[in-house]
Structures are given as C-alpha cells and as structure tokens.
Length: 246
Image 1 (cartoon, helix red, strand yellow):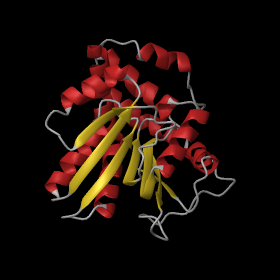
Image 2: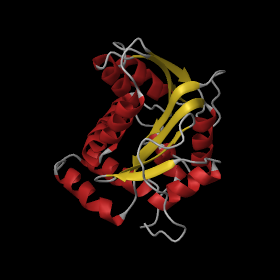
Image 3: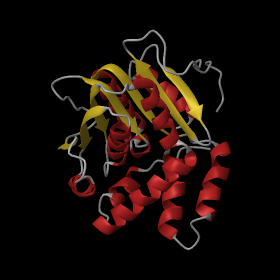
Image 4: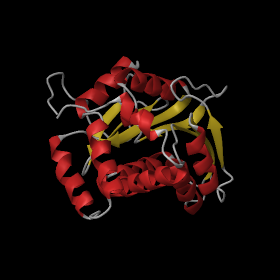
C-alpha cells in the first residue's frame, strides 16, 4: 500500500476552525488507544522512568498536547516528577493545548519548529508520537534527527504503521464510528499517511541514528527508540534485514 501523503491536505487542515481541530484530535485519541500507540507509550514509560525521581522531557510536534498530558498524568500516579516542554509550530493547536492542559503546570508549551528545535540544553527523554505522518520524508528525517540531538539519554519516536494488515483494525474502529464522517475520515487519513515499517527504519538511518531499536506493537503501531546511556534498547528486537518486506 503506497503512502498517500499530500502537503495540500495538511494545508487544508491548518485552516480548520478550532472546533474542527478539536474533533479531529478527539478522533486521533481514540485511534491511539485502539491501534496500540497509547500502550506503546505506557510500556516505554514503565521501562524508562523510575519512581521518586525527576525528569526533563521534550515532546516534539505536540499538537494539542495529548502525549504531554498522558505522560504527566501517568507520572503523577507513579510518584515521578516531570517537567515537560511541548513544542509545536501552529498557534491554533497551542491555544487548544494550553486550554486543555490548564491542570498540568508541569507542561510548558513552546511555539517552535520541531524540525530544527534546540532548547539550549538536552533532555532526559525526547518523544515524538504519532505525528510523522504529517511530514514529508525529508521533513520526517529532520524531526527524527532533532529528537536525537535534543536528548542526552532516551529518544522515542512512534506511531501507526502503514500496512495492509493494519487496515482491518482501522475498519473495526471506523465501524464503531458509524454516522460520524469526521472520525472516519481521520482514521483513514492517519493510516494512509503513516510510514511503513521499512520506511521508518530508513528514516532513522538517514537521520544518523545508530544502535537503535525498532519493533511493532499490535495491532497497528510501531516505534523506533534509542538509549544513549545503555548498550541495548528497552525491548530486545533485531532490526529488519535489508530484504525485509513490510
């Protein structure tokens, strides 16, 4: 299944009303839960963050701040202190993010381009979750490179996997969204614009990543990660061979 990325679609999305933006991101949250991204994120947080410790975290391309709020809420329950810098370029998204994050003072929202972001100092954890589908291949490489350069320890980039096998899951989710064309459209857009397993691996290599992990998370998610202070990744999974076919 060929990637259906079209920059014109994204330009139209930046012109949506605040209500339309919130509806789209509400649909994405449901997809994240149903297709494995939320579970993916929780698994890495459990493996990487230790109770009664403090961490500085960077959330690149935060959108409406869903990932940042998830991390902050999870950390509170685990007696972990976090200070999160959440970066996005578009003011309408940041406005919504700030409004929805009023109860999370540990999150600071920053308007900046995630493709070239530099916070002046590095972070314990840098994450970029389920947003690469909004970028061309070249821009996705820039985001992945910026994520690695901004961390002195751990980096996590994850999202949906574009694969024929993921379509049944999308069909199942959209079937539960009958009568809601906004949610159906967002579900199909998300999968068709995502990168395949092999493509994400190629992006990481082009971004200069070395000694990193890459694996699938059922039913339709994948992640690449790097642990600069450890010799192995959090999940022992070999990289695909050059002749791997997604």
